[in-house]
Length: 305
Length: 256
Image (cartoon, rainbow over the protein chains, first blue to last red):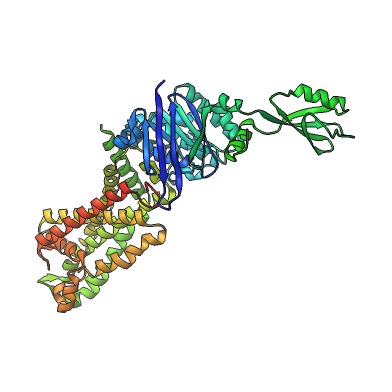
């Protein structure tokens, strides 16, 4: 499969001498749903800003659908739709106008843009708000507006920089559904997010950036396979005596709550059997943290996996 | 249609829509201000001043006031809309798009020219109520008005790219543009000034613009017309190159 985006040894040093990117190389295939993760200041937004020409790279190469941004950035940018981290539209303009103007910047004739605009506004649930100024929308609806705006010129690549930041879970899940459908219809999606549940739900491949370097770039399943420990919260009857010596790593959190961490050789049934032998009756088991989140913290904080 | 042309039309259409939507802030004030100038300086005080170079003071003042309106409105339109877009980050809509820098710049400059010339035309119409207008040279009047509005739209664009706050947007018009305009011969002929002040006035670029326009309007000028036209063209070209350079090389956190 051909690459939607090829990044080769991308480096960026800002005028204040901050090395935001220290040589990132990665390929993102067409129709991929790629998650670009990393802590704040890791270099995710810088990478995206270079792709869309908001920031100038110091060195390296970026190729978008076979077009080198150094040779013809205008042609390369035609393939991209971007949903930035911060709201970046004129809050006084009506939603419809913002989307139609965006189409014009990408060379779409106005009458075509008007038709597409209505369709997109319906898809993101903003049809009844089309004549309202964008500033009057709630945070979640503004995010949807930016998704519709990014799709108006029918790009083959959609880049979303923390698109669900500050969005409640219900709206977030609706947006996930929209993005999944777009990806199933052939759109390549690149997503940066702090919600690792979001990456786990949506992405097929994941790259992790830390301190300006790509420290992981693999499939989601491959990444999760690296995780050899999992933590659980166990809710039980009040505990009278807790075993001091145990083959499992167990901590008593409260009188009726335990936290257990299992390695890849231990099973949850063995744990329950062990606890039952020690007169501890388990009522409910809860996965303590998101698996990807655990892995992410381990990778970015340098802890062993 | 070429994508760049569609993009250009979109920018101009958006800006003109904004200009008309807020007409009370954009179109009405210059009409009121110029009416006051015509009333006070033209009618009440002008009669006591008498003629300048065999032309009534009011007729002498009309081209200066028209061009002052063009200068102020072209500059303000572009500086405020570009800085507003930068402040709200909506400028990113253009920067991430496939539009070339020349298209973005042309779009903003055209919007400045439209506002500058539209308000200039309004003031011209108002002036008809106070003084008869017999245009000496349509070609020179139109060329000088267009070049002036392009030049000050470019100046507004550069100001907006450098500006970091709303204060920065008002500093240039208040402390540089307004003094240069008022001292550029809007209300007087430099030939009336003492020799020293005449020499100082020749360093004021606005003097050349106003005199060129006045020549086109009523056939009177303190400065050689060709010389004025060359100065105006050189400054316009320089500002155009600087604007494109800033868009390419980066400004205020973008493309740096």
